[in-house]
Length: 118
View 1: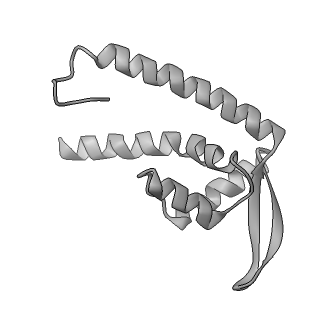
View 2: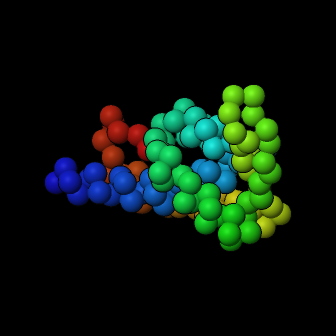
């Protein structure tokens, strides 16, 4: 049973990762390590090997733009921002998340014990 729970938790996190990354980037120009730090602070742990392909896919889909900036501590860094299309997708995903959250709360509220909260 534990493997079923763990597998489902992994799938749920993967499903919301794109929404969370777009949300972080919507706050302004960010470097990849800034994105990782923000996700970590939110308890959504992601490794660099996961985030780079996702950022590339989002950029190739027209949702992100980037600029190279010189760094005082090494090579130039790529800083990401949302495109207008990225902002629209974020808005739509945020609405979908609110609808899903409501559905989960509504369908599960009677099945939860007093110690469990969604």
